Image (cartoon, rainbow, N blue to C red; front, side, top):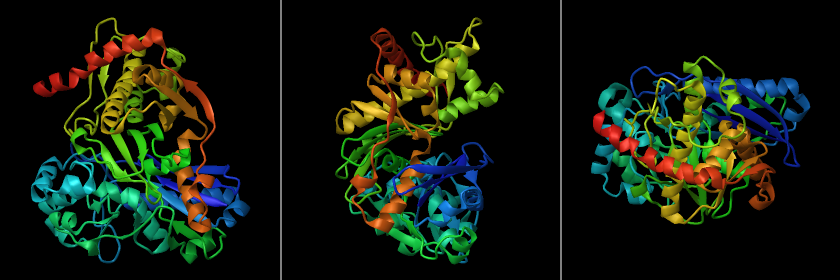
Length: 484
């Protein structure tokens, strides 16, 4: 048996996977976010640990024999979060998350200090990344910065608490702006530009390698053997790719989670920072990937559901499984700023085209379409950076909706496939990495493709109308940018 634990933004998921590769059981615990100031997004790092332990406790209570048979554990997690530890290993402050936009000025300063940053890290300096967050802390919380002994990402902090070891995998480390992504090693030059050095970093491992052994107290707590290994694991999107079997160059998927991602596997380091495309290491050796990132995908629908005090499923139900064409209302899903293609932490969301006759269904549809239009921006950026993407698997919470899948197919102009276990892809991928760390098997034998539940192709009757709506939608960001 193998265990995968995904440290997400809104919750922690844990899955048990057997030797045949099938999921045996799942458990989840929710997490809370804090927004103490405009553009800020923080979490209590210890809440991740408590939620992870609680989720595994739930599995152990319901499936004691299966949990007792676990041989390897894999971790995946939200990327970029700055978890600042004192010399005693305790957090100095709440973790600053991936969707925190406070460090825009520090991004400019970082690129000034290190003109070679884009060539080494393969990415623009963006507020979501980890390094600018440390410059912000150095400027605004110097007493805390002086006490920083280690900087860990979310899942690395959970690993530390479960094993006593500080280690990070290549895919997650790629999102710090401290990794030489082509060389798969920390860059002393990039660290120095942030006032840090190699001593502040955890050691690096590949995602499929052993990073540590589960601490005895937890092995005893869950009835496991005392030699359970913990794999390097992966950042959430690289882990989702492992769960989807996206391990060959050209494999691609669209994630509609809290954030949104268009992801493509590459066999080399292929940066395209001018298009705000991310170039990161994959979770397996000798593979990399490109990503376009939207900061608010399913989070946009969750926001609307909260505002309307109606569950998201109830908002979607009246629209059925397909719509005839675009909503007359347009929505910009920039509730937390945006990365690809705008790199604008100050970008804001908007509804355009509201009239007295506008109804709830048109607003709900506009939100789904706005996220799909943003995904088309990402698809275009990746296509320009490395060639056309002809179809994608759909994962994340948004993958539950056939309506949203069809809208994405119509807007993107390519086939979109809903897949089995698409909502737990990152946790499943983590479990697979846990297995690889134990067995050393060929990844192609373990990281198989999931069964496709349904395929959605662009409808000629809707595609041309969505092309026109997309062109109109594209004009909104620059127009509103001039007025805000």
